[in-house]
Image (cartoon, rainbow, N blue to C red; front, side):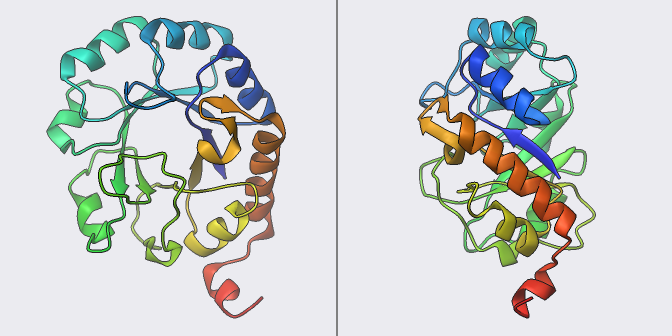
Length: 217
């Protein structure tokens, strides 16, 4: 089970996440967010962590020049688009990308995924009107498609306490957490980070499936 710790704002938290076993770190380039970082801050974080940590840059309907300016300064491995971006927009930067889909009640996940055939993964997040992410809300994990043939990243309201149930019910390939492992917005809690990663990995190794979960196993 791959784990991404998002909303990293400091070298200290980046090292904490990597040392705890995180596969990827999320850097938010969205000024309205309390977890926003500048390219200068992000570059400092990038220099401080292992080259094997996947540095992911999160953008929300950013002007292409803003994305290019960040890429000029920060060695991002992966881009994450969390707004209303379409596939041509996402692929123009010639970097691997993942596309976030907010799980509105009327959304057909399979149909929405099909619009991004070259995305390396699809991140499914909770929906709250007017808020692109980081709400702390969950959604109905039963809505996650089980045979999409795509790499699915589960996000939205995950915590050390519920991530095992989320993995068993949704069957994702990876999980993404931000607020659920924080002491305050933009500041990670060391115990929560370790507990989250440990719970996610234990849930994967237990092999409890959605069908077994619904049968009370």
